Length: 144
Image 1 (cartoon, rainbow, N blue to C red):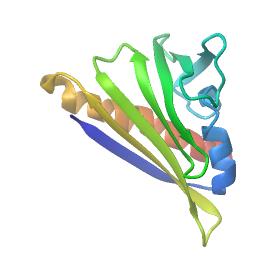
Image 2 (cartoon, helix red, strand yellow):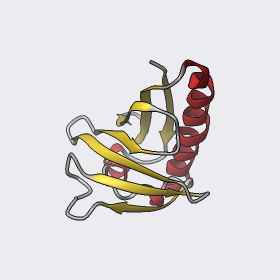
Image 3 (cartoon, rainbow, N blue to C red):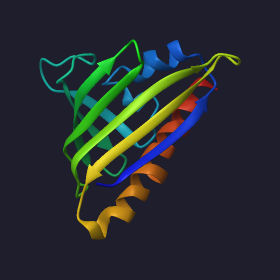
Image 4 (cartoon, one colour):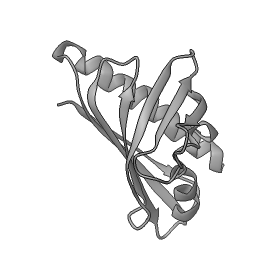
């Protein structure tokens, strides 16, 4: 099962960063690759089981389910329900950790997924160097 990880120091305290990230419907505010997010009728941006549909820059749609949300550890986990990517069992976690000496925070984004062996390297690069890197730059820009 392929896995990847990306992290960045964000120029804001962990409480502010977590407040932004924990909004499961708020991804377009800081992820430049996402133009729109809509929650399924009756869902809430902080309720496990909620499903969001994201519209990407090129018009593709990705539906994701909030699997876990933990304010104590400042982490949220989501899974892809439907997407144009040839993946199964996609599970990603975002975690915010304070840097106590600087007032900044670290955001870690981890992912495991399954796919055809021939697609693993390309998909790992797409998620790490594309989706995650763009999102972490977007978070940095949001707080700069």
